[in-house]
Length: 291
Image 1 (cartoon, rainbow, N blue to C red):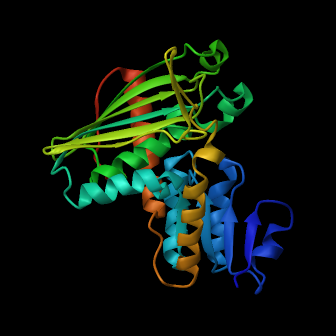
Image 2: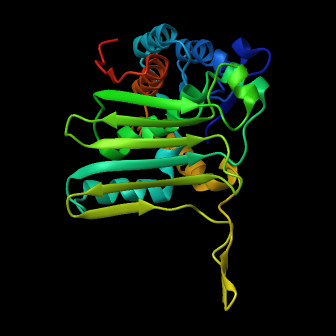
């Protein structure tokens, strides 16, 4: 049995230093993550933190330095790695089912845009929404991209554009192997939580489709119908949340180390920041990984 503190609320300092607390789950506002990670690390606690570590790279580096100094496990909640469909694609790719990967397509569309009040504090589409897909691209392809090119617009909700963000985007990543990945994001689908990916290799293709509300289809002379995709992320990624939590419990039992580390969080933010730079300049941005 493990005692885990859920952050954040009042009297955090008293709680995190308690000898009755084994680990800390940070699911608070993004701008509190780095401070709470440092607090928990200095208290010697294992840490599960939702993405991102922080929106500022300097602050991320400071935070990870504290974690490294205190030598505590830090697990970053990129839950999509734990989705049974996506993880099976990665396993079969590593097993050589389709040979060397040559291209990857990731589609991620929300059913409807979030409130503009959220947009203003989220860090924007690349840091808030597509950051999951940047991590997924690294996870599936098994290598870090060497360049990023981004294009986007605000056509779903004019208020999002007025808040200096975009709601529709395409990003192309190039990898050292010569493979490429295309990521497509939209803040609106109108039909559910659209989450798909396809990786093409020298011998074939691996595809992970949407998870629908049910598997019943109706075929008649008038046509064929089926259910829509699960409506939102809580339903779509329920199994992923359960699996990543089980992994964190194994970390607490010292059976393993965090599979998604603070460095993974840092690299996803670096890709998001570089995509934003590409969007602003209209140019492909080379990635150096020396920051």
